[in-house]
Image (tube, rainbow, N blue to C red; front, side):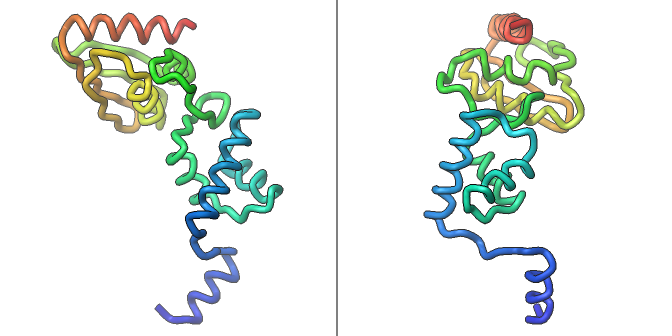
Length: 166
């Protein structure tokens, strides 16, 4: 790559060199502090808030940090997961994104979500720690949930229903 191109890319995009791991840790601690105070509506709002605290951050670095911290995007914005792994709050936080739950055989559930929300819902299900769930596969608006048995499938349907009514 030509050096002139790299200089122009830096000058026009404001790109910065990747931070050191110490900087990443400090930035993630700041994000954690911000999200414990209130949810962040957008990643751009987190970039601005971090800038106010003296951290140089880009949307892509904040996106990686949110993923690393396990933050979940809900209707109210980005939030940190609850401290209790088996808490129904993981699924309750994304309940508004669910559209339908349909059994497909005795060990598979097909869950439809709003467009673009399947991965957030699948992550919440994975983090819920509910027994009987083997795993999830998420696309754009569809999730496949594998269950241990037909009984586990029925229990999971009931538990998701309860969490979404909370």
